[in-house]
Length: 215
Image (cartoon, rainbow, N blue to C red):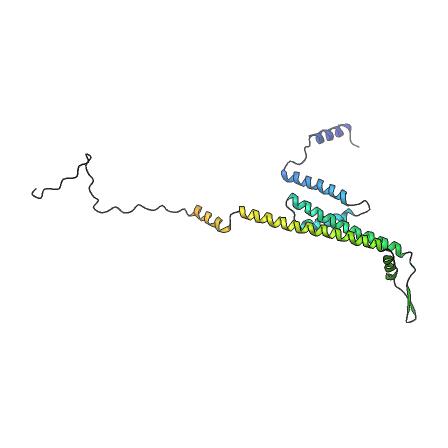
């Protein structure tokens, strides 16, 4: 059993905690909080959270969302798929319940009695056309939600990657820049001076006098 001093020390240490320190740790904590809220909003008490987490992990591993919008679109796809799976389960439960009230279908072939379990299910589904129409309508609704979010995801990602590629230098530009750094251009040398440069005038601006051939 823990002593009062140990309990007080644990409380003091807990009060000093400020959560994750690094940005990666804060991001992971936010993801866990968001995922927990999302799970509690979608999964019912009688449903399996383990199966839901498998669905979440599979879609995240395939699409790998990067931005906040991409994460929201992935959540829309997950919710639509999970609700459609729930719809299938409800439809099965209703048909199974209605089938129990049907008489067993027994056919005689070759003198042997044979039980066909599909006929009571078919009778149950045919007897409740309004429920079947409702399930079909909801299933098409969740299909539309899933594919709209998926198409929007791919469209937004393609636009984002295209925009990022414009900002990044191309491979040719990177190679040219590297060549300029490693092999800078050599400055051009001045042209050669003539062998007999012309005489310049004296400081007073007078032209030089020609030499006397007699001297």
